[in-house]
Amino acid sequence: METFLDLGRQPLSNGFLAADQFQDEYFFDLKACFNTDTCMVSLEKFVDSSKMFNENYHYHASKSQTMIDHFASAASDIKELFNSVPTVLEIGSNDGIFIKNFDPGHSYCVEPCSNFAELTNSMGYKTYDDWWNVETSRKIVDEIGKVDVVYSASCMCHIPDVENAFVAVSNILRDGGLFVFQDPTAYNMILNNSYDQIYDEHAHIFSVLSLSKILNRCGLQIVNVTPLDVHGGSNRIYACKSGTPAPVVNRMIESERSIGLHKSDTYHRFADNVRKSREDLIQLLSELKSDGKKIISYGATSKSTVVFNYCSIGPDIIDYISDTTEVKQNKFLPGVHIPIVPQPPSIDDSVDYAFLGAWNYLDEISNKENVFLSRGGKFITHVPRVRVIGE
Ligand code: DWN
Image 1: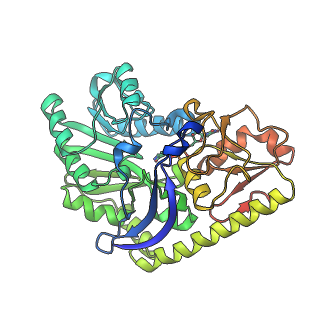
Image 2: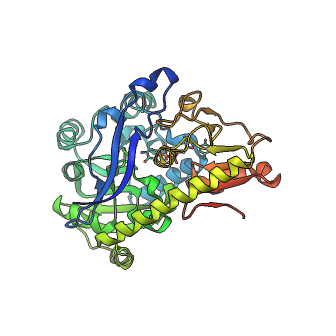
Image 3: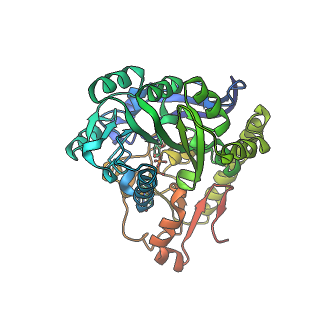
């Protein structure tokens, strides 16, 4: 393992908190490393999963229309692959945004955040409030048998012992069944310089190259890959116990090799770009602030927790963060403690600039905030480079 990036002392990225919790706040050293054997990008030290995923988990997937539409489409694509109603197990079902598109009688969930497990149970989906691992897979097989589809979105990369997680999938998948999972890609992270994909919850940043090596060790074979725009660039991986990989699988691996995802110096160059991004963002925001401009941030995201803590940008620069998620509102962003407020229908007239904490929803946000933009308001982003959008 070769450490290539140090993002400094970081809080829990989703650890939104009240002022009276500041003194007990948890911090850890966030460093990323590259495995020269598997080509996997991972955290140098994993954060205890129970600190991040528990009954107070703040992230509700259904707070963006983009993702509601995305998962409805994903469900439709999967249904078309089967002649009859498939038995589906979703790992990391969050608020039911995906599984709600399936028949409760043939669908099951695994969700360790009990606030969400209770929600999908109340929606009629048998939900196991457990960590996903071999032990849980055996328990579920004993209860319901094997399944046609295992689906997981933005979850597999959150599991430190991801090989155990994949063996567990192999355990529960019937012969001829399909494992479909999607997570942000190392390819897009390097191309977009989106270092804010690296945080406590993201134990790994996947590539097709690294996954093909690891899945093969777990009795699974990648048979197809679909690149996705969501979450800053993701891959939807289709794997099964045996099958012939579609040509796209090798094409994706060749694309990854063409930008050097198999070489450690690629990641050291990435780290140089990250350090420059920090300097550029601090300079831009400081100059705007000293010119008397009012700057807010849009979307209280895990990603913006990383950026603002890495760049030491706090409430002296960013007046507040607006967000649609009720459980985040009237709290503070972890670490730098920028206040989070309910998101109004339109950005307040007093605001000059909005940093895009939720840059992955640029289109949706631009449509929503056309009044702000038409009166001369500007968005700021750091991906793929620090800039005022439209200037
Ligand atoms: O992997 C993960 C992804 C799926 O979600 C988790 N580990 C944690 C989390 O990461 P994130 O917080 O960076 O995700 P999002 O989806 O970029 O968060 C968007 C945030 O922005 C939500 O809190 C909702 C908010 N939002 C908003 O306030 N106004 C979103 C839109 C589209 C809006 O118009």
